[in-house]
Length: 330
Image 1 (tube, rainbow, N blue to C red):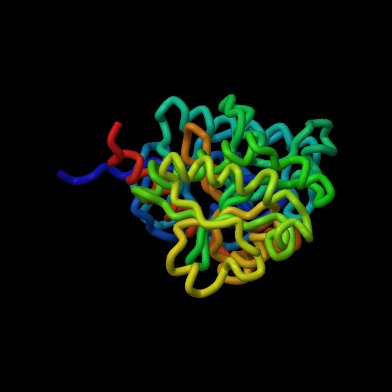
Image 2: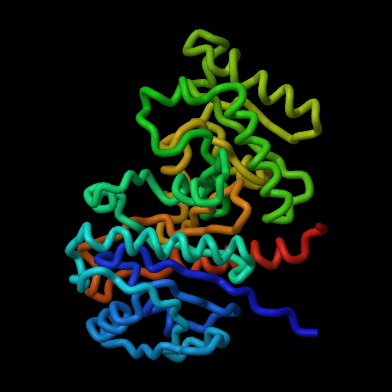
């Protein structure tokens, strides 16, 4: 019996950026999935003309053959798109595509969603409070806490805090929040990544993981007590470790995932190893969501120079997680 192809929804993101370019290029590449792009079909056709690439919109659900065909769930854009030029009047359209993909994943129409980059600034310029995909999808699915994890370069790096000023990081890491983060990370590594007993390496917050309290007490007061509590419940946790030596070659071969305390503690390492093919995954959601690890690249929109590697990696991971989830015991 042939396994059914997973149905992957792709949101095209900020229309003035490279999201439309990537979707047009995607139409030229065969994939072992049914791909449904959620975007304005006329904006896609316009971008295809600009790129001199073939594109025909498929009305029926078909396998993604890479012959220029693309199944599109049409959402009309408010105003015509000019590549590279942001327009706040199109911000509501961007959020509508995200809601459509999320709703489809929740109700089972789609097995996973993959998001092209959005532009936070122009959405806020439109008068819509928006801090990012991760927080927005959590709100849509009524999820109290989610975890941002990037995959690439042979590693998985999750974050205890995300888009937060450095001066606010320490106060944001509490006993409760850190425990929940580790539980979400552990659970999704088991259920979505099919790792039966994941080994998680956890960074300290301070240089040298606090040096026994001389360089900070967060490890003593917060991080280590949480690790000890969860170890007693069967979690395989290593740390708190100095972040400057945590990503050693030996550790990379042993760890199933790394947990860092803040954005720029862990992501520079991963992006150095994987830039161009890194994938952002939102853990803790009741759905599968992956994303590219780059921005809208307005200066590249419509030029044909946008690289598709990160989107392909995000789709490949979404396909893998979909299969894992379908095969997981209920």
